[in-house]
Amino acid sequence: MNAEVTIALAQRNFLALSLNPYPGRGIVAGLDETGKYMVQVYWIMGRSENSRNRVFKANDETGRLYTEAADSSAMRPEDAALIIYNAMLEAVPFYVVSNGDQTDTVMDDLDVYNVLSGRPPYADTVMVEPFSLGLALSNREYEPDVPNFTQRITAVSKLCQGGQRTMMSILRKSRFGDRCDQHTYELHPGPGFGHCITTYSGDGNPLPPFCGDPLVMPLVGGLEDIAQAYWGALNEANRVSLAVKWIDISNGRSDIRIINKYTQS
Image 1: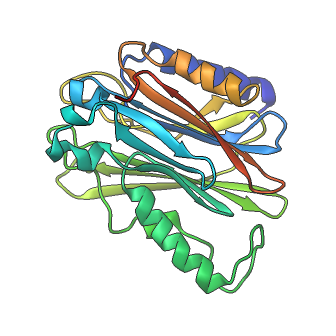
Image 2 (image 1 turned 90 degrees about the horizontal axis):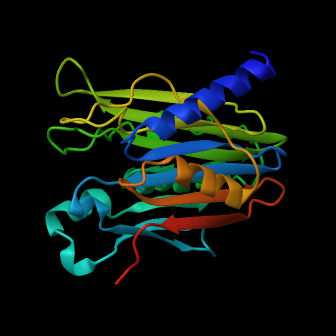
């Protein structure tokens, strides 16, 4: 696919996102225009008072991004398990982002993988098989939120010698029963582009799931440019929080930019 076609496709997908009233939670993972930084974008949206009662917070030293209640007194305990979680974690050379507590599942698997491989940052050893996101999530499934059965979406960006890898996973309820279908991708975005997966394809009751493969999306400008572009694309009534992680390929260091609609009380 030539550059002009890719740019047009990414712009068309971005326009579709901006016209979608409720894509739900979403992930974009790719490279900045210079090719020197890996980029991860993650956002959350909400229709109910409880799902809107959230903010993003971050630990800049560890690269951790997590959700907390904006108003803890209004948080229903029965809902906390699905809406309070680690959204981004990292263990160089791996950077994980997801829409639920499977972030921790992947990190637990990565901890074992890094020990077994004796892997220093950036090294590609042959001591063990390459890390498998599908295998790490093999015991997980979609969320139990009847009637939506929200998909679990996950991305892992990995620093490699001479570049990077992007892995993505979608865990969705089968059309033919209660079994979980797992879709796993290994992607190689070019500079200025990322791949996007969301939980829903639009508004509805029940909410229609995102279908198909990850969508090519633009990643234009710097950290702040990307944050403002995607925040501006999300439906103003339903957007809740957005974060962009900016990862320096030369040294593995990351920065996080957060935009919250609501303030924490």
